[in-house]
Amino acid sequence: MLIEETYRHRGMRHAMVKEIRSQGIKDTSVLKAMGDVPRHHFFDSAFLEHAYQNKAFGIGEGQTISQPYTVAYQTQLLRMTPNARVLEIGTGSGYQAAILAAMGGLVYSIEYNKILHKRAKQSLAGLPLANIHLYCGDGSEGLPRFAPYDRIIVTAGAPQVPEKLISQLQDGGTLVIPVGDADTQCMLRITKVNKEKIIEESFDMFRFVPLLGKSGWQNLG
Ligand code: SAH
Image 1: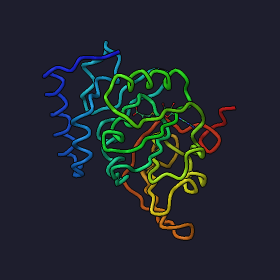
Image 2: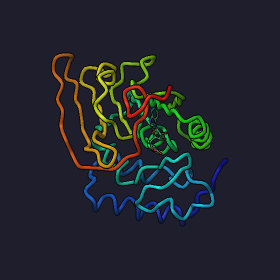
Image 3: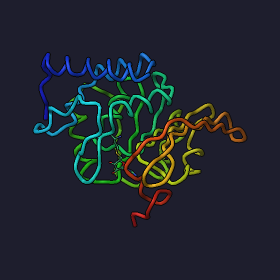
Image 4: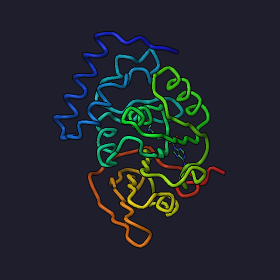
C-alpha cells in the first residue's frame, strides 16, 4: 500500500530530525536518511499521528518500532559506509532496514515473526529503495548464508553477545547490539579488527524487546 506523503509529513519529519540532532546525534548521513525515509509509511494508517513522535510504538505481535532516537543512536554507532554489507537482526516494521538502505547499504534483515516479516515486505515494497533482502527465521545466530558482513545491527535485547555474530563479521567490521537483562540493556559496539583482536565498547542503557531464539532468551523450537 502506498501511503501518501504530504507537506505536513515532511514538516513533522523535519521536526523529528531536529529533535534527534538536539539529543546529540551528529552523523549527517544518519540525519539525512532519517529526514528522507517516510516513517509514517511503516505505521498502520490509523496511527499516522504517532509516526513522527520521538517514541517507540506498537507494530502488533507484541513488538515495537524503535524510538527514532534509538534508531539514530544505533545507526551512528554502526559507522555505516555506502555499499557496506549489513545484517539486521529483528526486521520488525522494516524502518531500520530502510534507513540502512537509504545510506547505501546492501541490507539483509531477518525477522522470526512471520506476520511482521510479511508486513515489512509490503511496507518496503512501496518505497523506492533497492538492496533490501528480507528473511524469516531465527536470527539470534545471524544469517550465515550471506556472511561475512561489514556491519551487523541487533535491534532486540540479547542476554549476551552471540559468538556466531562475531564470526560472521568481516575483518574490520562492526557489530552493534544491546546486551543486558529483560529490563535494561547496555548498547555495545564490537569491532573485529581480525580473528585475534576484538574490541568491545559500552555506551548508554536502553530498553528493547527481547531477542528470542537459540542464542537469545528462549528457544523458538
Ligand atoms: N528494527 C525494527 C524494530 C525491531 S523490534 C524496526 O525498525 O521496526 C525487535 C524485533 O526483533 C521484533 O520484531 C521481534 O519479533 C524480532 N526478533 C526477536 N528475536 C528474534 C530472532 N531471534 N530472530 C529474528 N528476529 C527476532
